[in-house]
Length: 177
Image (cartoon, rainbow, N blue to C red; front, top):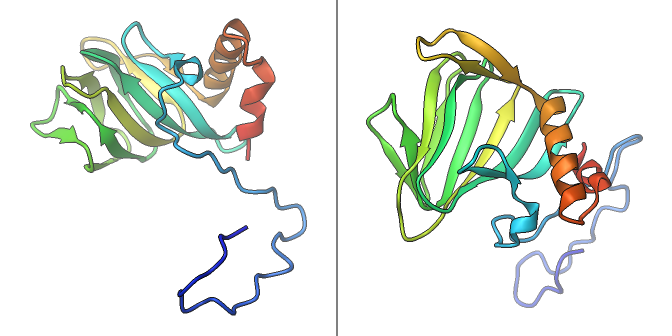
C-alpha cells in the first residue's frame, strides 16, 4: 500500500479495489535488489555470481543482478533473443566492443550477437541488472555453438545453491511469474 500522502496532488484519489484480473498473480516486490547478502548470489562462474529477482519458466525468461567483486568472466555466448542491462555499480563490458559500462549505463543486446562478458577491477563490485529472454548459447573459441544454458538450468542451479546455503530450494519458486 502507498505511503500516506502529505502534500502530493493525488492525496484524495481512491486506490483501485479490483487490483488483479482473474488468474493474475501478485507483483514481486524485492527491496534493495543489489544488497550485499551474498547467500542470494549464486555462482555462475568462478568469478561471477547471479541473484535471481524474477523468473518466468513458461517464457524462458529471468531477471537478475549479476555481480563480480573483482575481475570476472562469463564465457563466450550469444542470445537468440534480446537482453537488457542496467549497470548499478562497478565496471564491465564485452571483449568484442569498445565501450565500458559503469554505474547508470544501459545496454541493449541485439539477438544473435556473440560476446564475452568481463568485469574490470574497480573499487565497487560490478553489479548489473539483466533481463534475459531465452537461453544463452555457449560458444567455442571460433564462435561456434558449444552448449546452452536456459531458465530450467538456471532454476536448478539456484535451487541447489539455496539448499546449500540454508535458504531452501523452494525460495526460487517465490520469484516465478
